[in-house]
Amino acid sequence: MLLESQKLLLFSCVVTFGFFMHCFSIIATAKASRLQSSNAHERERDRTYARQQFTKNFRDLQETSQSLLKEHENKRLTSERLTKDVRSINKSAKTLRSLMALGNLAVPMKIDKEIKTPQQFDKSIRRLAKHIYDFAHNPIHQSSKVFNTDQAQQAQTDLLAIIDLSKALEEKAKGYALLPESP
Image (cartoon, rainbow, N blue to C red; front, top):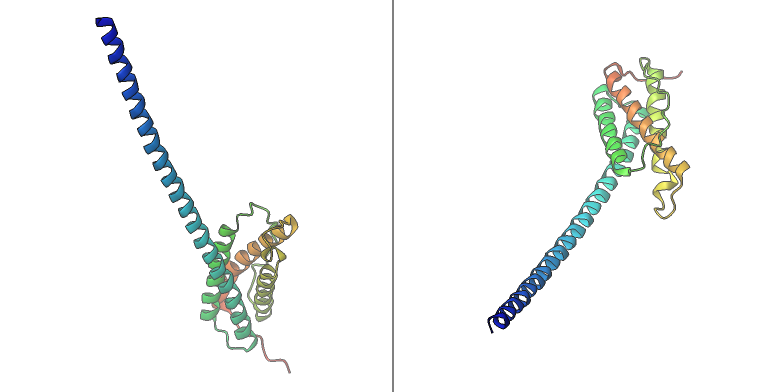
């Protein structure tokens, strides 16, 4: 009889243990589901934030470039304004480069960092504006469905040129001088 009661007790312990394991499994599954849901929500929030940052910096880069070129062409650009604008351009370009996750496709371009004369400033400011225009109008920004490595490489190359040229202009901005009037 003792053997039968021990078997019954053991059986009830196994059933009880199984029941608790089942409950713990349900609780763990529910927690994991909430955690996955929370992680998915966080990932979506991070993607939304990255898109907003990209849009803001993409717009700032273009607006600052257009304003800089316009001030330069209208002969109202000062060395202080040049410094401020190229610093802003540099910051936006670096942020865009970090957000673009294209790997390291850029082909470094030779940037003439000897900017001393009004003609060199004019050429450098126009070249910077051209790189920004080319980057902004690169077809890679039009569609995310088709990835063209040549376009991605050109976008990264333009960004790298923007970063390097804006830094060079910032370093030389104190010597900025307007082009003399043409006769």
